[in-house]
Image (cartoon, rainbow, N blue to C red; front, side, top):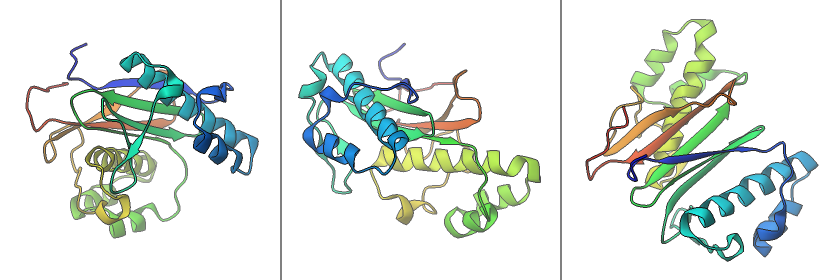
Length: 207
């Protein structure tokens, strides 16, 4: 695979993970979760993140050190990455030269999905959802949601303040210097995911 394309790692969070490589802060946060399943999902996703970055950087997972952007996003000086988890799975997107964002959601009932879209989505996105049949609505809602969140993560900006501003009426095309692409995997039945990757330097055409 060309090095300018995003790499995506899928993580099964139903399998317990050894937390030995977590930082003291991560281990403390894991203990704060109210249920065992939430702790397991947090540990599994963050252990996998450290292992994935360590593999790309040829480093010990325990030695991975994160910084934080002005908006609180974890960052690393040698690699761009994004982590998302929902229910039993997590996705980790990585790229050494381009900013990247990834979002994963399990399709689930959303009360007042159209009202949420009207309040937080762009007009073209709301109009599209409003024209969907009842059977289509949830799937299309999560397609737009994951595309928007992936783009916002890639840009490193705040979610709520930018949901309307970052328009993804047509995911899969360029948007302000970024490609937005759906991500699918045989294990992700009932899930929807999108990856956004920086393309303002050109040279990226994942289609």
